[in-house]
Image (tube, rainbow, N blue to C red; front, top):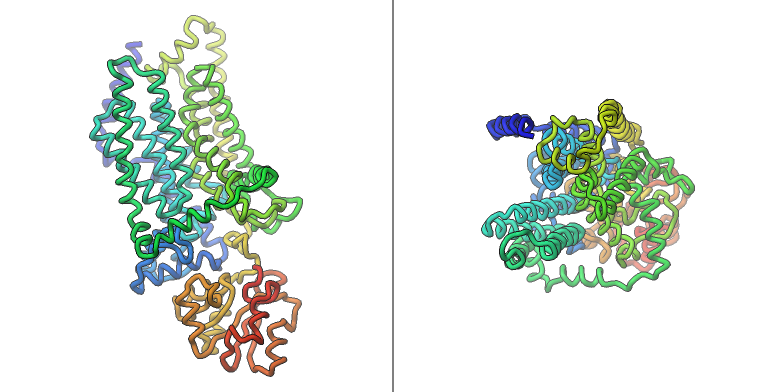
Length: 632
């Protein structure tokens, strides 16, 4: 044993002797970030330049920030903080507002997940006591998966939905802070250090709740993890005087999270103070809906397992042209590989209860926190009244109303495949290449019972195992690259809630400029994109009180003249609204712009102002089949 420990000690000394800046400069993280940048830029250039209306709202808010406004929450949603809009405003200030700049800004934000995955994988590796090349492989594979995630996940990372990617970043950061806290706690760090770690965790929680209450997934996961550590410490205290008493006293440091969480939530407190705590009451009111029935819960479990979660894990995009009833397209190579790794992690965690084999224990340490997070996400989706209200009970088709509640799974997916790869790789390392602690652990399991012929057989298996590992990784990453490259450009960034949206607003905007149209009423799917791409030169919105940007709706209503835009069936040559105007001899000009197959966008420009409240047209504007509020 001493002959092994000495060179390892020398290797560690040499490693510590390397300057920190050189370690950072030579870190494989840079390669992972480069891969992440390349694939995201490829998707941006490969996909359509059209921007769905719900994403355009964030861009509009960023434009308004540059005009001197200081919003705290997303438009008409006083529970999603405006952090994303402020970040995008910085990009717009440098390069000007455009769809391309917006996507590049979202790319830079999403790369934070790659960086955090690197550090979280390092913390998990330390938890499992991985060393040397095994730890490096675990970290590199996990970070590469985060840099090259399934297509469904990377598309959502690039969407400016007002804070979902920032919420996922907060979740991973909260779990990282919680894991590092328990590691330092178990290492008997000073109470001063532990206090600061509790304060930092509390700040992340408070700030995360301002960004999006969805961070509750990570908060509950960390609470269960820390609670489990404390419970184990009380039931099986370490052999030192007053161990339980010291543990209970140090647990009181958790109260430090309260003031720091309040500090992190200061933007929400300011908003609540000014708006009669509308943000708090909004969350409470919408989160305390009537519980769904058992039948509904079972339906949600089915939708979750066969459609929503399968898309997040496997990467299939609901807007792909081949998705239809009877062919959901959710079965992918990524789903199979990740599904097997998740199943193996579950088996290892359950087996660790009665089988203390080193490989099983390391698998548990590497995947327990990610699995806790995954279980919480799954339970919330299947049993939440909010999800039940928003999820239509349909087959897995081109519809994805509630996938945003499940997409946080993407932050823990990398660790399951990385764990299996790292543990298999460790099996190929001779005993002389392992650390002393790992060798001792394995020796305790097999000492005196391994015949030489079995050892020889194990050596012969090392090469096939390495080939198998390499083959799995090549297949997995090749499948992701193939999914990116073969994706249908017009549908990559198409919103699954609106299949009629324009593939390009440019011809419509040019027409409006040429005809002096500065104001228009339309569904938000059309209106908000026009307002964003023109940087407010043309203001379009839904009529009051439906418009989410109330100041813009009011400005249009008070203007001297405005046009109307509708989605119309391409085969309908004489839409209802035109019939109404002709019936009352109201003069207008009209033009159609091809949208999606079977649909056009119709712009009607009256010669004189026609109030949207005019009883002659009001009921037609509100017609769910033909009006401005019609389904998209």
